[in-house]
Amino acid sequence: MTNRNLVFDFVKQAAPFSHITELNNIVSLSGIIASDDVFADRTCFDSIGSETKTCLLLVQKMLRSVALSMEDVTSVLIHMTDLSEFDEMNTVYEKFFQKGLEPARTCVGVSGLLGDARIEITCQAIRKKV
Image (cartoon, rainbow, N blue to C red; front, top):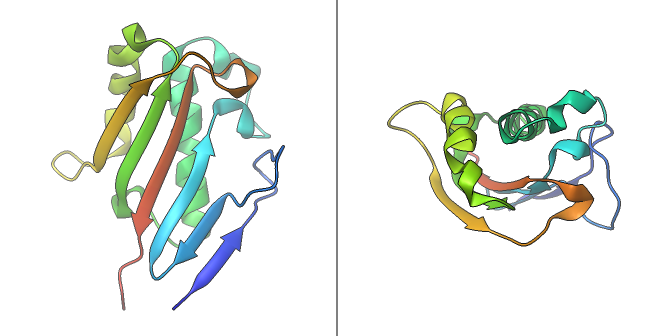
């Protein structure tokens, strides 16, 4: 049984939580908004597409840092403040996952997110046993 809690220096942290936890090969990433990326260009807030891309690039970077990839993601939870932007978000989102191997996904509309974000992405991955 493994139990790993990680905090990364390339992700902002404003509260007491781990960016990634791992228990019994289940890897859970905390919710990511575009402004969590400490190196993000401010233009990433210009559209839901750019916010989505910034979030997913950060998820990808976090997964790589623990020897996982987007192919290991089994489920994604997306919170959006404006569901009318779903198609634009989805156009970007689909580029991050191999067609036919997409993870389970839930997308919900919310009245607000921290930092005036339009989107927050949370995911779970499985570390394949060796």
